[in-house]
Amino acid sequence: MKHPLQQAEYILTAANDEQLPPPGPPEIAFAGRSNAGKSSAINTLAHRTRLAFASKTPGRTQQINFFRLRSGALLADLPGYGYAAVPRDLKRHWQQFLARYLATRQSLVGLVLVVDARHGLADMDRALLAGYLPSGRPVLLLATKMDKLTPSAQRLAHAAAVRAIAEAFPAHVRNVAVVPFSATRGIGCETAEGTIARWLDGDATEVAAVDRTTPAAKDKAPRSRGVTRGPKRPV
Ligand code: GDP
Image (tube, rainbow, N blue to C red):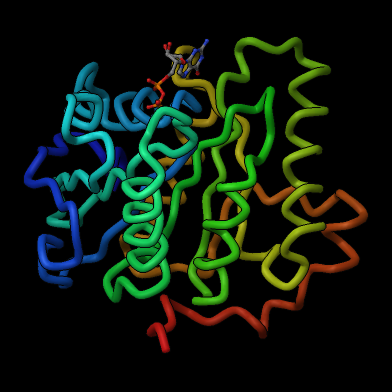
């Protein structure tokens, strides 16, 4: 599966649990703070210019947009978070919807979390990871917009993201791959595609390009026996 997101097609939008497609084919989810670069990452990986445009249309920004991949797998584009302008009740509704989806969706095999490399992890990124990681499933953290940084700043931003994960989630370090990324320059695309392809092939153990050289990651990473093949069923 060389370009797993190529030929993705929009299929439906879900605003609540009842509207989710029946779980069946393997599913990957994309999440990120508004403006982090999630739509651009999806479009680049799908080799399209406006695929994730659906998620930007009014009325669809707080819902989960689903796309079907060539293999039959599904891609769930989760609502971007961090908009202060959203009314509090609505915000609470979709935050709970999102958290429930991530913690309990049976067919979910991996989460791609898009983070602006210049800003690092947001509180809501941490909150989502805290709900998701205990399920034992992997995360591909795309530290994006790397093209806006000098090579030395890129290295620092990557190391900072790896450290932030190791400090916040020491028990799950091995399940999180931090990949430097740029939608505009194509940085990290092959690595991301490789990881996603492996997830969809049923190999959830392999997370690519985890920086194990960081002392915090080395010290706290559990041995591989703690990692199961394939996603654990939510309890
Ligand atoms: P979303 O709200 O997370 O879907 O973010 P978008 O994909 O719409 O991106 C937000 C802004 O960042 C847009 O102006 C994009 O053109 C820009 N952007 C996204 N990814 C990159 C990137 O890798 N490099 C640069 N330079 N700009 C990017």
